[in-house]
Image (cartoon, rainbow, N blue to C red):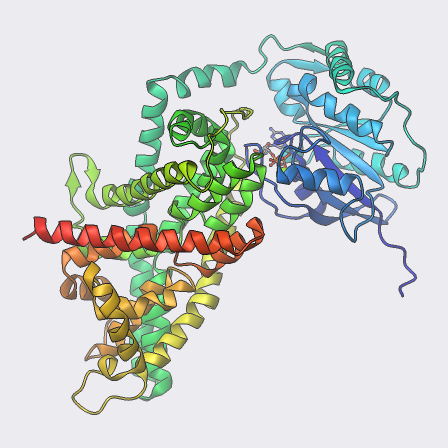
Length: 615
Ligand SMILES: Nc1nc2c(ncn2[C@@H]2O[C@H](COP(=O)(O)OP(=O)(O)OP(=O)(O)O)[C@@H](O)[C@H]2O)c(=O)[nH]1
Ligand SMILES: [Mg+2]
């Protein structure tokens, strides 16, 4: 046993969006996700808080909550940690109550509740910069007196007040003394909170003036939806228009590496693998890095500016019409990055059936792993022309995202009438204040996304491609026969083809579908590898995948392939996280079954209709 006592724990607690995680990151050097909407943090995270005497404490970042009486699974975590019910974890020795200074009258109630717990509490009066912007004056000394606990002014995003906070926390840790506050019921607490806020806050006729003015435009019944549509439109146009130059550089770089490999290495298995597996396979995925970066830059700006919740509000009517609550919007929106954080974000949804419905449809939101698949098919089959002022490729991409959303709405409607019967509750979400996104946060966010994409390419996508390359390269075909036809992968693919040929899929798609269960992007890598193995000459593979596809697939097949990827649950990780979050096998199995059924029917319909129309 260690003789060193465990570090004391300090918990960051407060209403959603008050800036807890921003403080956590600033105090510990962590890079947890921060965004301008309630419900970003859904799990507890621990970091090291250095104290002025050289000792340290475990700082715990918690999901936002409105009280100790949890309404949703994420708020339960907050209560359990605070009350020491978290398994294997001691009660926090002290609490930092994070308060949005511009919203004292609503947020002080929870602070009083925390004080009543009897644990030492210090208030971090955060967002003081915004309080100033709104013309509010807060009498800090009076607030300390009224609450009977220390109050420190902070601006988490500018790292202001951090030292003061650490200085104030330190003496509390040795302190077994309990704060003395008469136990009040909820009503009385609420009244007391209001009274205190009224006593210490002055000025602020301008309160929220900036935000209110912008909302008059962004939430306007007519202008609001138009602006939202325009923003999304611009986003998809940008994904193609801005990415094409950097994509060409990457493409050229990969082709140069292939040529270099041919020049420098003797023919053999290793050279084949580098050219066909690594460069033609994984390289075909990495080309899409610029598009991923542009997409996320847009999403991050929307999240950080506070616009996201407005979008949720605008979509609420539509959501309600299929039985979803506005609460589902943010988890669904997060699923545009990846279904996994999206499904985890459903922990903010109080109603279990609401939550289950949202989990079930989250994989229909177009995650970023589909982007390479969509983009390679679009590049191969959709001409880069303009329709009026809009690029056709961007329009098609927009359409694919829209298809996923429509599919999700239809699925929600069906689920709400059957397995998760019920109706959604109305829109209940606090509107955050508008902010100019902090450049640093933006850069960190983009970097994290780019890194995650490249890491996937270097691990799971690489691994799946290696296996596929082996299967497609052996046994070695005799002279004059097609290597892929003769290989194990080719034979397995032919078997699968019988199942998927009715929906227009060819043998090469059949080969790609199985490894793509590991990650959707593998479909692109697999096609790149298969065509590279089958190609006659080894030189200059630049732009090859798109042109190979364009030459060997019919347009109906390509469209069916796109439709398949709109719906198909090609992702083992989604299965695993659904299993964990629903704590059952039934739900993930159900999810995969209904999504595969939708994919099969969707691809089939697309193929038949396209074939009929195109003669
Ligand atoms: N202007 C200003 N913005 C801040 C400050 N602290 C945090 N923010 C912003 O407020 C938003 C919410 O910050 P988070 O740290 O994610 O808030 P949280 O309390 O962890 O939110 P949940 O995890 O959803 O409960 C982000 O957009 C931050 O950039 C501050 O002191 N001043
Ligand atoms: Mg947080």
